Image 1 (cartoon, rainbow, N blue to C red):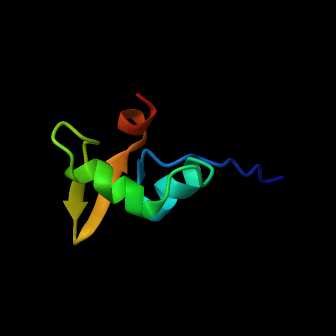
Image 2: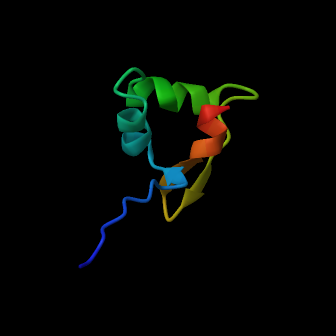
Image 3: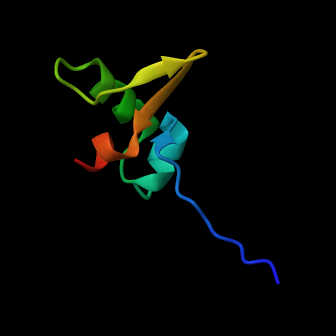
Length: 58
């Protein structure tokens, strides 16, 4: 018997972060939060914006 385990990602792109937040924060609002001084920490990988789950939850 094979047991399937769901592992939650440590990093989200903006669409994934929107879904993780239950749709409470739009992708546009997330982009605005990235631009603010001292805003949401993020980094880019190959043009994709990634946000750590721990940074969003803090």
